[in-house]
Length: 200
Image 1 (cartoon, one colour):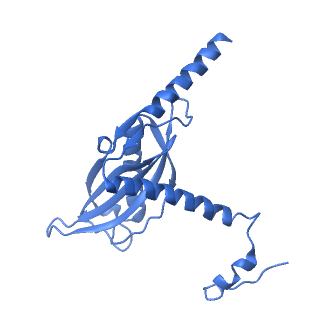
Image 2 (image 1 turned 135 degrees about the vertical axis):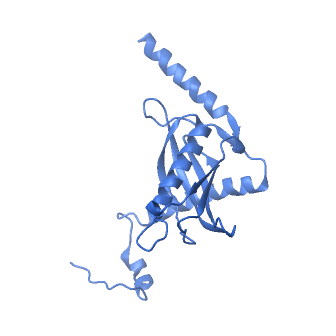
Image 3 (image 1 turned 180 degrees about the horizontal axis):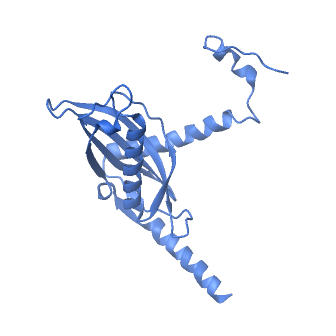
């Protein structure tokens, strides 16, 4: 019985220490650059989007793990728009930075750019936000250090993450099958490329 109480108190102490700890954002920022090879291409000769997503997940994991000092898992990925195609032979640079810290989660901002080796032209290919959760040695979610915000852009990114989370939870609850009212959305579907044939 006494050992359980000691373990419980040690866990509480660890949580309190982690909550009170803050780190500078630049301490966990990462940049990787990789040459895009023919083996990464799709049928049209462009770099396959799945390969880019894999690289994004890897750098998000590395950034979150470096900040939290724990292994992390991907909880969600905010919208990924492929803005420009990436060609075989281009250099792909991925940049990752912690934008937001919750109790056990972090939002990692990612930017992907490609560079034509011959011309030096760079293209912004996509940006996205990966929510990562820190896990302890027992695979339980564990507290992460906060971040120190030192610029207007860092405050803007942090605030944007809070707003995006709030909007996401509203969006999810509005379309919950228990509260969804079809009549509220029929006008929205009138001009869409769909045909409604509800079965009784």
